[in-house]
Amino acid sequence: MSFLGWVDHNAEQQDSILRALGAAKGHDARDELGLGTIRDSFADLFFPGLSTIQQRVRYFLFVQWCCEIAASQGDADRIVARLHDTEVRLIKALSHLGEGAGVIGILSQEDLERMPSEIYWNGLMVLGMRRTSGSRQRWARQVAGSRASGRYEALEEEGVVSSHDLGFDPSRPPPPDGFLQQEVDFTLLVEEADFLRARLKNACIDQTGRGHEYNLFGTFSRYRRKTLVRAAWEHPKVAELRPSARDLLMLGAAFSRIMHGAVILYNVCVSRLLEGREDAAQILDNHLGSFGTWADALTPADVDLLTRRISELSLFGSMTRHRIDEKAIAFVTRWTRYCQEPSKILGDAAANRLVSDREAFLKAAGGTSRIRSKKARERWGGESGGAMDYRWFTARSCLNDLATPKNA
Image 1 (tube, rainbow, N blue to C red):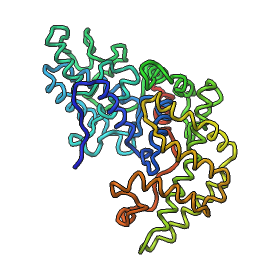
Image 2 (spheres, one colour):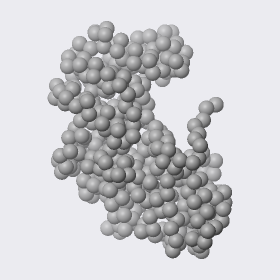
Image 3 (cartoon, rainbow, N blue to C red):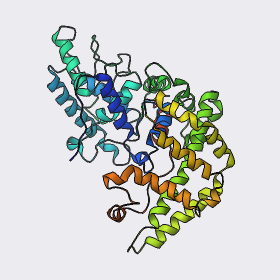
């Protein structure tokens, strides 16, 4: 069994680790070719504060309200325990919505390993709703310590903001009457939608504001209807983005489309190595067909755009505190060159070797390389990865929640 831990004395390092853990969860986190830091750099600039496992924007308020209720307890251990119990009550209050509605822990309930507060903790900091650094345990100790020094007074009613600072933005909308005492849902009130819209618009992964001009929430949230577009660059408000944001979004789109071909070719390479599987030929045919479709759709304009701007990728990583190593940039550079003639890639041994060697370099030492390990191939489901969406499906869900407040 493996685990991740840190010495609990550096809140900034804790926030960095929590941010990385949040970003590394969910379907968009599969990273066979070591492009995750570039992907996450784009995502953190476009949609700061979100991770792939967040689904409903009202959870930002739910978690703050739950923390304020928990803060009525005495010492830090009691605050943490009360927070857990309060979140279990939240799960039960949302359970009437059923599976598929975005309720966290609807099946596990009190046995849930990652409570909503853990999932949304970093996002609350990025949105400016949480004002104390570090983990939930550190926050509980700060609350308890401040109360012990006479700066806090206990909350007398659940959900009522204390006159003292609890480490969260006190200007948040109040919880609904009877919060956690009756059923609740994800429908926002106008006051809540306005508050969250402003927080998302002003969010930036860098606390100094560096890179804020690439935040897409401000423009996209002005679209007050729900949308089902499959990519951020297809949003109805793209034309209204400031030039810097629109240019970066177009670069992200080109990067996603170009590198998707490398992922498909990786699937082809693994499929060619399958042995003894009845469906091996079908799996290979499917991936060959997908690659042909990709090659036909790829445009010279995308290749030219990425070729001209590859050198900027590391800069975006520094803005978002992601370390994009030179080998990743070299891989992207070489792959993009092959994409100048996409129809020739399948038959180009060097292009195939580039993708295979990249995966083996990243995973062979750990025994998880499907290129090098027969056992790893035997565990393969037949397909890996996909086109990068930069957490768009999470952002789309949040934007759709914001589009239709209850009492508009």
